[in-house]
Structures are given as structure tokens and as C-alpha cells.
Length: 325
Image 1 (cartoon, rainbow, N blue to C red):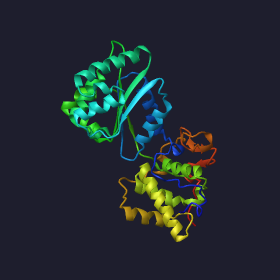
Image 2 (tube, rainbow, N blue to C red):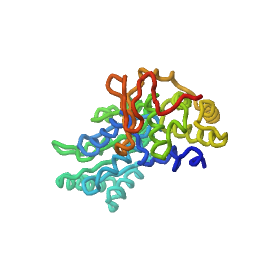
Image 3 (cartoon, rainbow, N blue to C red):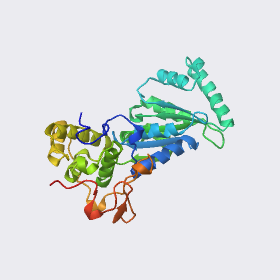
Image 4 (tube, rainbow, N blue to C red):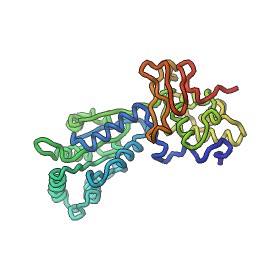
């Protein structure tokens, strides 16, 4: 619709988890490293937390895509609102033990043997539970008991719980304290800083064939960050609709007023004060190679360089966007 007008080859802000557009700010990079380790290390339970829209599911899919089925058997449950019987039926199907589906006792015996055999062959077995904040308490207890399957030296089943911050609140309940005590790895994804938002938008525009400065003004990006609260999914919604609005008004680059109009229509509001420029967090690179790398500030934050964006200083932040004239 607007691609030709803005010099793009494709829509850069679709909500589908396209790995081509994977962008790793430091918090996502740490989370992906932890997921890789949790899937393969035999540590037991790994907990990944993050607000809705911060990219948890995309990171899970990325980690799973990197692990070959010849070394790891990974079963992902994306809709955990199941009864106990349905949960064990899902596990039976997922781990290829259909003959055990009718009996929990039979399943547990067969599952233990399945895990033992894989462990003796040096293979990994993992259960991933997405949207885990929605798991009924009885299933969280079942998960705890499954995580207890072990030898004297190793956990036989790696369990990954991925959910929103409400999951942490639930784990603080007295009835779930034993599950919380078994969490070996834990990470919480934070939302983007202003600098990370700018690099994220610029990265997606470049991957789609565009020139960031020709598409969004600097003031527009600042407003996108403020009203999205740095949540990647919301950034995508705002930017996509702002491009539609810019195309309709025959205006480029997209201005702050166009972004304001979109956020008013969607009732997006700032939850916190915007991050001061000089205290913005460092920006990491996307995962698609050096041709798609974003700016990475040095440790002290004064100067940064990038093969895509060129050098910029803190007082002239995100120079790949221009001030509105």
C-alpha cells in the first residue's frame, strides 16, 4: 500500500515473528543466550519473563530453530489453559508416546524410561511452556514434579517457563514456593530505551530496503518511543499505521503529528517519563549479520559507530533520522 511511496520493498512492521527482522537489544540478547543454555544444559527450570509484546515468543522460536532435532527433543506448549488430563495427553503426543495417553501412571513410567534412554545417548529433552502465567496452579505443580525427574548428577528434563511478569507474582504464592525454589535460571526482558527504539525502527526500515531519514523524522521516533513505552509490538503497530497515514496525506518523512494521531486513535499513552538521551541504554545489533547491524554505543556512551548508520554522538542521537523541517 505505502511501500513504493516510502521507497520500501516490503512492509517492515508486520506483527508476524519474521526471523528476517530479528533485532537484539542487550536485554533480548541476554534472554536468547539464557534460552539456549536452559534448553541444553540440564539445569532444570528456566524462567523467562517479559511484558506482552517484548518478543519472548520470537526469541523462543529463534532458540528452537538453532537446535537440531537429532540432538534435542523440544516440545512447546503455547496454549497452557488445559486440564490435567489434557496436559498429559499433549505431552504423550508431543514426546511420541501415544500409547501412554490414557493413564498418568503409565505415562510417567514410560516417560522416565524415555528420558533415561535419551540421557544415556547424550541427547537433550526439553518442555517449553509459553504464556505460562495462564497455567492453572494444578499444572504448575505437575510441571514441578516432572522437573524432579533426574539422576544423581543431572536433570533429565529441561523445563522452560515463559510468561508475563504476573508469573513471578504467582511464584511468590506460598503454594508454589517449591516450584520457585527449583528455578535455576531467570531473566526478565525489559522494554526498549529511546536509543534502542530508534535503532530498532531504523533496522527494520533498512531490511525492508528503505532509508530511515526518508521515512520518519527524529521527532516522530521520539514520540513513537514515548507512546509505545518501548514495547516492540506496539512500536510496530504505531509505525505501520503512521506509514499508512503518511501515505494518505502524501507526507514524508512521517511527522510527530501523524504519530500523535495514530496513538490517539489506538489510545496508546505514555506510562513513564521518556528516557533522557544521555542516559539511554546501549543498543545491540540484529541477528541477521553485519549488513543489518545497528549502532552499538561504547561502554561510556559518548560515541558509537555502525556499518549501517555511521558515527553519532549522544547530543546528536540517532542521526539516521532527521529533525523535521
